[in-house]
Length: 87
Image (cartoon, rainbow, N blue to C red; front, side, top):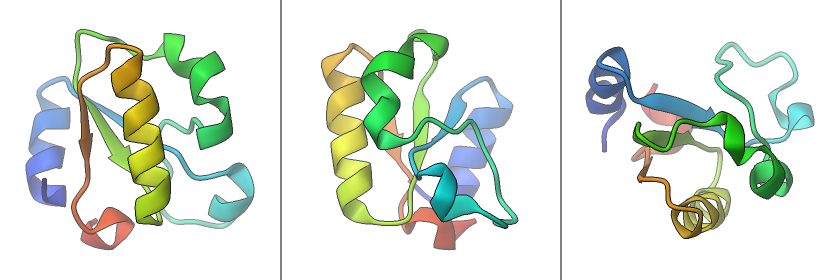
C-alpha cells in the first residue's frame, strides 16, 4: 500500500506502527507509534485488534518479521510500500 493510501486509512481509524528501534530513529523527523521489533510480543496488547495496523519500517526484513508476528497474534497488518521513503 502506498503512503498516501495508508494515510487515508489512518485518518479513518487505522493505526500506524513503527517497528524501528529507538536508536535508529534518533533525530528522525517522522515518529509514529513506536514498538521495536524485539518488543512486539510483549507490547502488542496496546494495539487495537479491530483496526488495521500499518507498519512503518526502514528495511524489508523488519517489515516481514513484524508483519508475521502481528498476524500470528491476530492483527490485520499492511506494510507500507517503499517503507519510510514513501512518506
